[in-house]
Image (cartoon, helix red, strand yellow):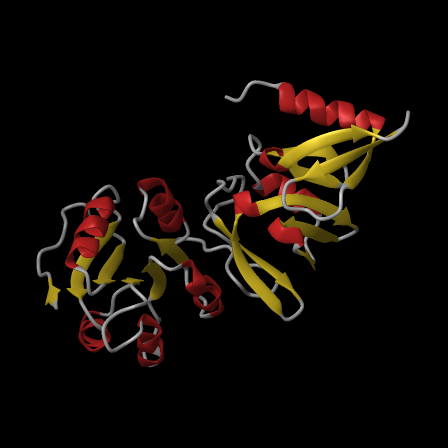
Length: 264
Protein backbone atom coordinates (compact mmCIF):
# COMPACT_ATOMS: atom_id res chain seq x y z
CA UNK A 1 0.00 0.00 0.00
CA UNK A 2 1.21 3.52 -0.73
CA UNK A 3 -0.20 6.99 -0.85
CA UNK A 4 1.07 10.27 -2.24
CA UNK A 5 1.53 13.65 -0.57
CA UNK A 6 2.42 15.74 -3.61
CA UNK A 7 -0.39 17.20 -5.70
CA UNK A 8 -0.28 18.10 -9.34
CA UNK A 9 0.05 21.75 -10.32
CA UNK A 10 -2.98 21.54 -12.59
CA UNK A 11 -5.36 21.24 -9.59
CA UNK A 12 -7.04 17.96 -10.59
CA UNK A 13 -10.78 17.64 -9.94
CA UNK A 14 -10.85 13.95 -9.04
CA UNK A 15 -8.70 12.10 -6.50
CA UNK A 16 -8.06 8.48 -7.46
CA UNK A 17 -6.97 5.24 -5.77
CA UNK A 18 -5.78 2.19 -7.71
CA UNK A 19 -6.48 -1.27 -6.26
CA UNK A 20 -4.83 -4.27 -7.95
CA UNK A 21 -2.62 -7.06 -6.66
CA UNK A 22 -0.53 -6.94 -9.85
CA UNK A 23 2.13 -4.23 -9.84
CA UNK A 24 2.40 -4.28 -13.64
CA UNK A 25 -1.34 -3.66 -13.96
CA UNK A 26 -1.12 -0.63 -11.65
CA UNK A 27 1.85 0.72 -13.59
CA UNK A 28 0.04 0.29 -16.89
CA UNK A 29 -3.05 2.07 -15.62
CA UNK A 30 -0.95 4.84 -14.04
CA UNK A 31 0.69 5.47 -17.41
CA UNK A 32 -2.71 5.62 -19.10
CA UNK A 33 -4.00 8.10 -16.52
CA UNK A 34 -1.10 10.49 -17.14
CA UNK A 35 -3.01 11.70 -20.19
CA UNK A 36 -5.84 12.90 -17.93
CA UNK A 37 -4.63 15.79 -15.72
CA UNK A 38 -8.11 16.11 -14.22
CA UNK A 39 -7.29 12.98 -12.22
CA UNK A 40 -4.78 12.73 -9.37
CA UNK A 41 -3.63 9.32 -8.14
CA UNK A 42 -3.43 9.70 -4.36
CA UNK A 43 -2.76 6.08 -3.43
CA UNK A 44 -2.38 2.44 -4.47
CA UNK A 45 -3.30 -0.82 -2.74
CA UNK A 46 -2.81 -4.49 -3.54
CA UNK A 47 -5.71 -5.99 -1.57
CA UNK A 48 -9.06 -5.10 -0.02
CA UNK A 49 -7.89 -4.48 3.60
CA UNK A 50 -5.18 -2.03 2.55
CA UNK A 51 -7.53 -0.44 0.03
CA UNK A 52 -10.11 0.11 2.77
CA UNK A 53 -7.47 1.78 4.96
CA UNK A 54 -6.58 4.15 2.14
CA UNK A 55 -10.18 4.92 1.27
CA UNK A 56 -11.18 5.70 4.86
CA UNK A 57 -8.18 8.00 5.29
CA UNK A 58 -8.00 9.72 1.90
CA UNK A 59 -11.70 9.86 0.88
CA UNK A 60 -11.06 9.52 -2.88
CA UNK A 61 -13.54 10.49 -5.57
CA UNK A 62 -12.82 7.45 -7.74
CA UNK A 63 -11.48 3.92 -7.23
CA UNK A 64 -10.13 1.74 -10.04
CA UNK A 65 -10.80 -1.68 -8.53
CA UNK A 66 -9.54 -5.09 -9.60
CA UNK A 67 -11.94 -7.98 -8.93
CA UNK A 68 -9.87 -11.14 -8.55
CA UNK A 69 -7.23 -10.69 -5.85
CA UNK A 70 -5.64 -13.10 -3.35
CA UNK A 71 -7.94 -14.07 -0.45
CA UNK A 72 -10.47 -11.32 -1.18
CA UNK A 73 -12.68 -10.23 -4.06
CA UNK A 74 -12.93 -6.62 -5.23
CA UNK A 75 -16.66 -6.69 -4.53
CA UNK A 76 -15.81 -7.21 -0.84
CA UNK A 77 -14.69 -3.60 -0.66
CA UNK A 78 -18.10 -2.18 -1.53
CA UNK A 79 -19.86 -2.75 1.84
CA UNK A 80 -16.96 -1.00 3.57
CA UNK A 81 -17.69 2.16 1.60
CA UNK A 82 -21.27 2.59 2.84
CA UNK A 83 -20.21 4.87 5.68
CA UNK A 84 -18.67 7.40 3.30
CA UNK A 85 -20.53 10.51 2.18
CA UNK A 86 -20.28 10.97 -0.71
CA UNK A 87 -19.31 7.50 -1.75
CA UNK A 88 -16.50 7.21 -4.30
CA UNK A 89 -17.28 6.15 -7.84
CA UNK A 90 -16.11 2.65 -8.75
CA UNK A 91 -14.56 1.49 -12.01
CA UNK A 92 -13.92 -2.24 -12.08
CA UNK A 93 -10.82 -3.28 -14.00
CA UNK A 94 -10.46 -7.00 -14.66
CA UNK A 95 -9.47 -9.59 -17.22
CA UNK A 96 -12.76 -11.46 -16.84
CA UNK A 97 -15.90 -10.38 -18.74
CA UNK A 98 -18.15 -12.68 -16.68
CA UNK A 99 -18.22 -10.16 -13.82
CA UNK A 100 -19.69 -7.38 -15.96
CA UNK A 101 -23.35 -7.83 -15.00
CA UNK A 102 -22.58 -7.89 -11.28
CA UNK A 103 -20.42 -4.80 -11.68
CA UNK A 104 -23.21 -2.78 -13.27
CA UNK A 105 -25.75 -4.08 -10.78
CA UNK A 106 -23.43 -2.74 -8.07
CA UNK A 107 -23.90 0.69 -9.71
CA UNK A 108 -20.30 0.86 -10.85
CA UNK A 109 -19.41 3.85 -12.97
CA UNK A 110 -17.89 1.54 -15.56
CA UNK A 111 -16.28 -1.82 -16.24
CA UNK A 112 -12.95 -2.10 -18.05
CA UNK A 113 -11.19 -5.22 -19.28
CA UNK A 114 -7.43 -5.64 -19.20
CA UNK A 115 -5.33 -4.49 -20.87
CA UNK A 116 -7.07 -1.11 -20.66
CA UNK A 117 -6.94 0.81 -23.94
CA UNK A 118 -6.42 4.57 -23.98
CA UNK A 119 -9.60 5.16 -26.01
CA UNK A 120 -11.78 3.05 -23.72
CA UNK A 121 -10.36 4.72 -20.61
CA UNK A 122 -11.10 8.15 -22.09
CA UNK A 123 -14.76 7.17 -22.44
CA UNK A 124 -14.86 6.14 -18.79
CA UNK A 125 -13.42 9.42 -17.59
CA UNK A 126 -16.01 11.34 -19.61
CA UNK A 127 -18.69 9.74 -17.43
CA UNK A 128 -17.32 11.21 -14.20
CA UNK A 129 -19.06 14.56 -14.59
CA UNK A 130 -22.40 13.25 -15.86
CA UNK A 131 -22.85 9.46 -15.72
CA UNK A 132 -25.80 8.42 -17.97
CA UNK A 133 -28.42 6.20 -16.33
CA UNK A 134 -31.03 3.97 -17.95
CA UNK A 135 -34.71 3.74 -17.07
CA UNK A 136 -33.87 0.86 -14.72
CA UNK A 137 -31.25 2.86 -12.85
CA UNK A 138 -28.39 0.92 -14.43
CA UNK A 139 -25.59 2.96 -16.05
CA UNK A 140 -25.34 2.74 -19.80
CA UNK A 141 -22.02 1.93 -21.45
CA UNK A 142 -19.40 4.64 -21.41
CA UNK A 143 -20.75 7.05 -24.01
CA UNK A 144 -21.96 10.61 -23.79
CA UNK A 145 -24.82 12.12 -25.77
CA UNK A 146 -24.21 11.79 -29.50
CA UNK A 147 -21.24 9.46 -29.09
CA UNK A 148 -21.46 6.02 -30.66
CA UNK A 149 -20.43 2.71 -29.22
CA UNK A 150 -17.56 0.75 -30.72
CA UNK A 151 -17.72 -2.92 -31.72
CA UNK A 152 -15.68 -3.95 -28.65
CA UNK A 153 -17.75 -1.94 -26.15
CA UNK A 154 -19.90 -3.88 -23.69
CA UNK A 155 -23.63 -3.22 -23.67
CA UNK A 156 -26.10 -4.33 -21.01
CA UNK A 157 -29.12 -6.26 -22.33
CA UNK A 158 -32.15 -6.97 -20.14
CA UNK A 159 -35.23 -9.10 -20.75
CA UNK A 160 -37.40 -9.34 -17.61
CA UNK A 161 -35.24 -11.25 -15.11
CA UNK A 162 -32.53 -12.03 -17.67
CA UNK A 163 -29.51 -9.74 -17.90
CA UNK A 164 -26.34 -10.15 -19.90
CA UNK A 165 -23.39 -8.13 -21.06
CA UNK A 166 -22.35 -8.59 -24.69
CA UNK A 167 -19.96 -6.85 -26.99
CA UNK A 168 -21.69 -4.63 -29.54
CA UNK A 169 -20.14 -6.62 -32.37
CA UNK A 170 -21.84 -9.80 -31.11
CA UNK A 171 -25.29 -8.36 -31.91
CA UNK A 172 -26.27 -9.65 -35.36
CA UNK A 173 -29.59 -7.85 -35.84
CA UNK A 174 -32.18 -5.71 -34.04
CA UNK A 175 -35.85 -5.66 -35.02
CA UNK A 176 -38.35 -3.04 -33.87
CA UNK A 177 -41.56 -4.00 -32.09
CA UNK A 178 -43.10 -0.67 -31.09
CA UNK A 179 -41.18 0.70 -28.10
CA UNK A 180 -39.41 -2.66 -27.78
CA UNK A 181 -36.51 -4.19 -29.66
CA UNK A 182 -35.85 -7.84 -30.43
CA UNK A 183 -32.09 -8.35 -30.30
CA UNK A 184 -30.62 -11.33 -32.13
CA UNK A 185 -27.34 -12.82 -30.94
CA UNK A 186 -25.20 -15.73 -32.08
CA UNK A 187 -26.28 -19.37 -31.73
CA UNK A 188 -29.91 -18.45 -32.33
CA UNK A 189 -30.20 -16.54 -29.04
CA UNK A 190 -32.48 -13.54 -28.82
CA UNK A 191 -34.14 -11.32 -26.24
CA UNK A 192 -36.61 -8.45 -26.18
CA UNK A 193 -36.07 -5.28 -24.17
CA UNK A 194 -37.88 -1.98 -23.82
CA UNK A 195 -35.75 0.28 -25.97
CA UNK A 196 -36.92 1.68 -29.32
CA UNK A 197 -34.92 1.03 -32.46
CA UNK A 198 -34.24 4.76 -32.83
CA UNK A 199 -32.20 4.66 -29.63
CA UNK A 200 -30.12 1.79 -30.95
CA UNK A 201 -29.66 3.56 -34.26
CA UNK A 202 -28.16 6.56 -32.46
CA UNK A 203 -25.73 4.43 -30.44
CA UNK A 204 -24.50 1.64 -32.70
CA UNK A 205 -21.44 2.14 -34.95
CA UNK A 206 -22.58 3.28 -38.40
CA UNK A 207 -19.73 1.50 -40.12
CA UNK A 208 -20.87 -1.82 -38.71
CA UNK A 209 -24.68 -1.66 -38.61
CA UNK A 210 -26.92 -1.06 -41.61
CA UNK A 211 -30.44 0.35 -41.39
CA UNK A 212 -32.29 -1.97 -43.75
CA UNK A 213 -35.70 -0.50 -42.95
CA UNK A 214 -37.50 1.53 -40.28
CA UNK A 215 -37.81 -1.67 -38.28
CA UNK A 216 -34.50 -3.48 -38.90
CA UNK A 217 -30.82 -2.90 -38.15
CA UNK A 218 -28.35 -5.54 -39.35
CA UNK A 219 -24.73 -6.19 -38.47
CA UNK A 220 -22.98 -6.11 -41.85
CA UNK A 221 -20.40 -8.65 -40.66
CA UNK A 222 -23.19 -11.16 -39.95
CA UNK A 223 -24.78 -11.16 -43.41
CA UNK A 224 -24.29 -14.65 -44.84
CA UNK A 225 -26.58 -14.71 -47.88
CA UNK A 226 -29.44 -12.96 -49.63
CA UNK A 227 -31.83 -15.30 -51.42
CA UNK A 228 -34.55 -14.07 -53.79
CA UNK A 229 -37.82 -15.88 -53.08
CA UNK A 230 -40.08 -14.10 -55.57
CA UNK A 231 -40.53 -10.71 -57.24
CA UNK A 232 -41.36 -9.00 -53.94
CA UNK A 233 -39.55 -10.93 -51.24
CA UNK A 234 -35.98 -11.80 -50.31
CA UNK A 235 -34.65 -14.00 -47.53
CA UNK A 236 -31.85 -12.54 -45.40
CA UNK A 237 -29.69 -15.25 -43.86
CA UNK A 238 -27.47 -14.19 -40.96
CA UNK A 239 -24.51 -16.04 -39.49
CA UNK A 240 -25.49 -17.30 -36.06
CA UNK A 241 -29.25 -16.99 -36.62
CA UNK A 242 -31.45 -20.06 -36.87
CA UNK A 243 -34.28 -18.36 -38.76
CA UNK A 244 -33.84 -16.06 -41.79
CA UNK A 245 -35.46 -12.63 -41.95
CA UNK A 246 -37.92 -11.82 -44.73
CA UNK A 247 -37.28 -8.45 -46.37
CA UNK A 248 -38.79 -6.64 -49.34
CA UNK A 249 -37.21 -6.15 -52.74
CA UNK A 250 -36.54 -2.48 -51.95
CA UNK A 251 -34.95 -3.39 -48.61
CA UNK A 252 -32.72 -5.97 -50.30
CA UNK A 253 -31.51 -3.31 -52.76
CA UNK A 254 -30.77 -0.97 -49.85
CA UNK A 255 -28.84 -3.70 -48.04
CA UNK A 256 -26.87 -4.78 -51.10
CA UNK A 257 -25.95 -1.17 -51.86
CA UNK A 258 -24.71 -0.63 -48.31
CA UNK A 259 -22.69 -3.85 -48.36
CA UNK A 260 -21.04 -2.92 -51.66
CA UNK A 261 -19.75 0.42 -50.34
CA UNK A 262 -16.01 0.40 -49.61
CA UNK A 263 -15.20 0.58 -45.88
CA UNK A 264 -13.67 3.80 -44.60
